[in-house]
Image (cartoon, rainbow, N blue to C red; front, side):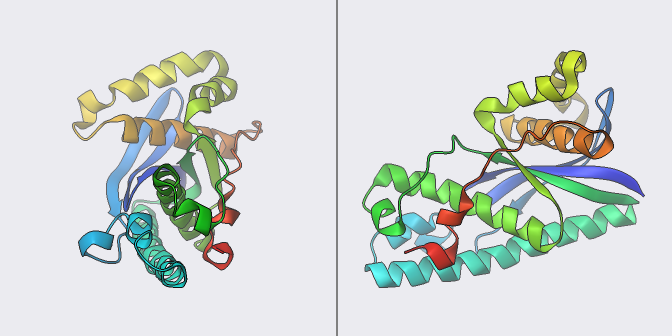
Length: 220
């Protein structure tokens, strides 16, 4: 089987996922899709922390824990479906890449729910963690890349080939058609580093996601 890697840029309740194969000089996008991981409808659909801020703390904690596990099941199902479809095409997913935020450490849940800015930040981390967990549960190694450092990581991984790779990725939309936005471009860049790491001894460029402070058992 041929080796491939997946990259994802998460939003509240959904993510833009790209699967790639090939090399820096001949990169191939073999799949791209939107994965939806919102388990409930109505006002709580894709902004669970916004919904939880209006609940009593014990109820908010329970709601977020239940939402996490329900959403994680959807994420696992989406990733598993992708793996199976790629396997039919004779591709093996060797690794995954997740785009991370700046890495600001969040306070415990009680502190998050009293700050609108922290609620937004927590929701971003929440859904990134869900996708991260889905990959880990399916035994896909995951690497995190902080978006602000992505160009630096690409330059360090590919050296003189980096500008050509970035140009190729930025213009792939002309060949593939829409959607080819920042979501797909950054997910592809991150996945290309993971793929290179699987094929050569390259430095580890992973960011520390610090997800432990959002995982349900530690929401308190």
